[in-house]
Structures are given as C-alpha cells and as structure tokens.
Amino acid sequence: MNDYLGYIVWHSLPSDAQFDLNVLTELVEEENIPLQVPSTPTKANLFKRGCKNATFKYDEEHAKVGVTKRKVYVRPSKETNEFIERKIARHRVNKSSGLNIEEDIGTLTFDKRTGTYEYSDEELTEDFVRVMAIIDGELNSNNLIDHLAMRNIVRTFLEDQLNALWLRSGTYFIEKEDLPLAKDLEDVCIVLGQSDLRIIPLVNTLDQQDLVARAFQTEINKKLSEFDELLASLKASDKQPTSPQISNLETLIKGMKYLECRASSLLDMVIVVEQSYMATISYETYTNSLKEKYGK
Image 1: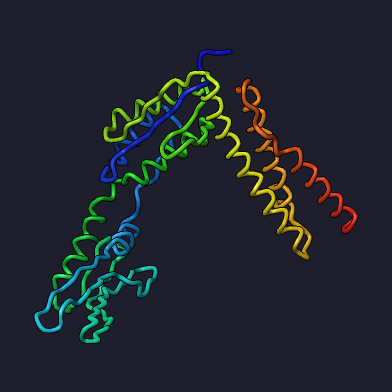
Image 2: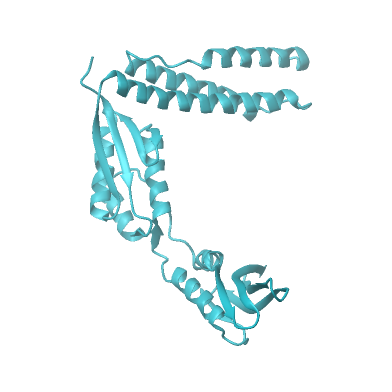
C-alpha cells in the first residue's frame, strides 16, 4: 500500500477580492499553464452588468404616514446596434396610506461607439445619482474580475486539466501524477495574492480511501442520472433519435467506465459501485429496439 493516495487541493478567497485580468494573463503566459482566462469585457457588457447590479432598497420614515418602503432598480428598455437604453425605476409602498406606485425616474442611454452613456434631463435625485455611481464603478473596472469569476477559473482548471474530484466547497482531490500542474496553479495564486490555494498530501488510510471513494461514487452517479434521464426522454419520444443523442449516451457510459477504472486502480480497501454495466445493457437493449423499428 502506498503512503499517499494523492493530494487535497483547497482553494479559498474573500468575497471582496478582485483580480487584474492583465496581471493574471501575464502570469499564465509566464508559467505556461493552461488556465482559461476570460477576455476583457466590452464597455457595453460592463454597462449592462452595472445596470443589473444597480438595485437597492431602503425605508423612508414619515411623521404622518409612517414607513414608505422604496426599491430602486434599472430595467431594460430598448437596444439597437448603436445604443442601449435603460430606465431607472422606483417602487414605493406604504401600507398605512395604501400607497403602491411604480414609476420611471430617469433614462440612461449608452453609446456603443464611444463606450459612454448619457442620462435624461429629469431631476437628479439621490436615487438617480446612486444608480449612476454603481454603473460608473462597473465601467471603471473593465480589467478586474471578482471572486466568483476567479473561483470558476480555478475550478474549471482543476476539473478539466487535473481531473480533480470535488469533495466539498473549495476542496478537491487530485492524483499524485497531477501534482506538478497543481504546483503551477499554486504559484499563480501566490503571486496574485488574495487567492489562497493549499496542496495537502492525503495519507492512504481506510478513512481517506472511503472519502475518495464517495467522491468517485458521486461523480459516477451523476453521469448515471444524466444517462437515465436522456434515455427516458428518448424512449418517450415518437421521433427517431439523432446521432448526437446516441453519442451522448455513449459518452456518458464511457465517462462512468473511466471513473470506475480510476477508482479501481487507486483504491484497494474500498469498493466503488460500478454503474456502467447496467447502463451498457440498457443502451444495447434500446439501440437493438431502434434497429428493429427503423431497420438500422
């Protein structure tokens, strides 16, 4: 029995973390690591994101009628090849007075050619100014990505490049041969700062094998569930299945077999329930019925 099963990779970062795309791109090139870095968003997309994020609520106290609840948000209006128009809306509710009013308090027009926007001639209320401050913040952060985007970059790399198994939030298992690439990722996170990535050897004990086996079983069962759902939908349809649909069934079976083989070669004290055998029988039964029905 080997001393180590593999490694636990733990990734954590604060919710207010932001990362410079230019710095990240340079690091990826220097390390020659296949990390998928998103392209810099366009000004138009940043404007849309700012409008989506510009939603807030607050209470306003009145001596006579009590509390009026306010919600301010930006709603879509129209878009062409040249401009994007958004309406700033406000919803006011006061249960005591029966007030329930939804109204537009301003218009924003974004010019796709210049990457700038203008506001309508309505009175610049505090709500209006607050909305524009949120949008301006997005427009000025075109080289930054937030913690969710960075978390997704790391997760995609671990799963696609290292065949990592998800254990729990931010925690993955990788096999020993994948350590060099994991170290490259660790170096990127160290230089970036804020993004903390730790690689911890996993001792080969019965308890740890059970932990890894459950992760394998979860992934196998996910593919089985996808297979069963797709097969059931194809059987329920009156139409002949397409080649891509049949290929999807085959791909899911291959994915189950791959995970089962990995588990079998890695674990010697814990058994993972193989699901590919029964899925293969179901697949062969279904495809044979198609041959009888359609002659091929």
